[in-house]
Length: 413
Image (cartoon, rainbow, N blue to C red; front, side):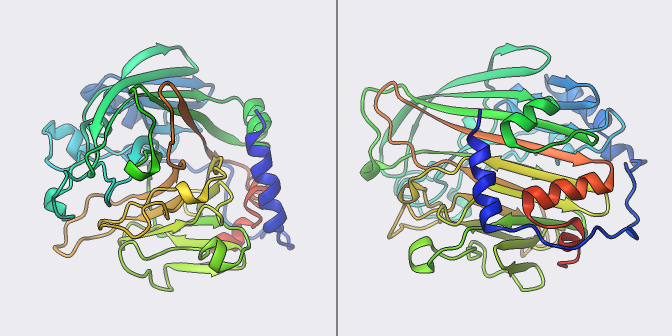
């Protein structure tokens, strides 16, 4: 499959690799010893086993843990075996509690399947006629507590499915099937499908194909609301994590701004920086903020670098060629319900009352809205890579894929 090769070609054309050598005085080592068991993959996998059924996909020292009961979401992964870093954020307190919360059950997980839009006249999270307030906000059960069926599973892949019926804020009823196919990747698969060479490095990579199929007897129309496939990943924050998003050049009147940071109020300059064709976002889990990248600006690539733990994370998807079909999730009746973003990143932080769900940070991708005839389907494919190991090789990957050295990323904040 060559869909990502095109993305990287576009990316490198708009984000030239920076000159300069790697900083040999860096204190990076080939791997970081994780002494805190709560941060180790094996500890978290075994914790999950105690509270829910899991499916584990493995490839040597690489492994991912999937929870069918939570929509087949990838809860966590490792690039270095049971004692390696556990990459996904897991809400252990909520899971161990065993009680079902009212508005959302944020179990965590580094890749989960949702559908949009969240707010607006075509919302899936608000009942018809209600005000857009937190008291009325409700995560649909098929995105929250409803298990998906395991269609098939082996050591390297697992397929999940669920039949769904839901009514949006405007009263349109959707009957559909969701399918989610998760595959752990070998180094040669990663190279072939993403053009990224991880040989000589510690890595875990997986691909998910997330599909929505119109099972109703009517076509889905823009005027009555469309559904988008929305992928969200929750990861471990630290003061050293920097999210990096390359963006395309373009006329702002046509392509929109390079970054939209108006979700929860403007993000301060010490947390968000725009430098050329790169967006930098501080992901320390200490200040609540969210940003979005419009579809005509998005390359289909985003990532993060944790310089403390020496982890390079990359998220790759295909951006659709329908910029006027990306759903808007703002909590209001919208002038343009299809002016949404294609990529997002969220940094968790305390609410006004001092409470906090996390801390965690998120990397998110979304498909365009699905205009489907009965029986038609839309698939949104996403690749997730966590890479650790030899600092020079890791820096080489960062330069090729993100167009920046690790030192350049680290020094932004």
